[in-house]
Amino acid sequence: MSSTSATASNSDTQKAPSSILPDNISLNKWEDTGFEWSGLLAPHTFARLKDVLTTEHEQPQLQLDAKLYRRSNVLHLAFTLAGEVWLTCQRCLQPVAIDLSDDYDIALLDDDSQESLIDEEQDYLLLDEIVTEQSPERLLPLKKLIEDEILLKAPLSPKHEDCEMATSQVGDIPEEENENPFAALASLKGKL
Picture 1 (cartoon, rainbow, N blue to C red):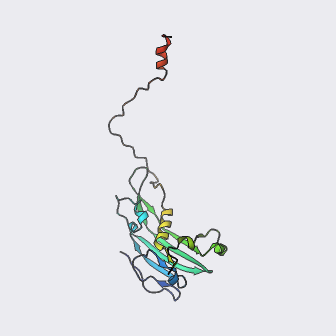
Picture 2: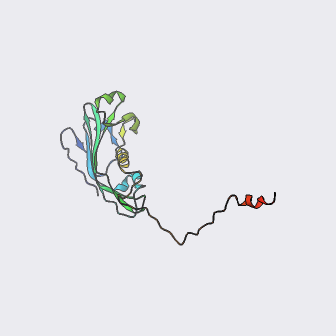
Picture 3: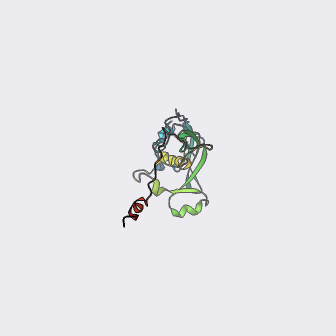
């Protein structure tokens, strides 16, 4: 269930007319006027994230508020994500909730010369490296960029804070007698 508003919040920014998060947005159309999208997303709509989600727990929807805007002659993609996903704990192999809630702001630079226009701590990407089409229009991979940030936020090895490693044993483990590596030499001792 996705929801979005089709009205503009101000005269400079247009809201997306669709209730589905677009894979790409046209920079030719939106980079000067701005772009906003707000709605609920199912985590499995992100292909790479879907691969790490647990199937043992129902995934709640994520609230996403995204905005493309220009500040100080630099294009920015900012979004707020609220919600959690369920991944598999790498210790006990049970579902663990991972909170993805955060505010993200990425500067989208035309080239390296714009780097001086942003703060040192500001995350940035070069448009030439991420734009999927150069003609007839430049497409910003909106969904992929948001998924990239989600995957960076999610731990590589999720685990419960107070988790003990899963150990299970079926039957007794037979004790093996270790063979003495010098036993063959001892048998030769009296023969030479």
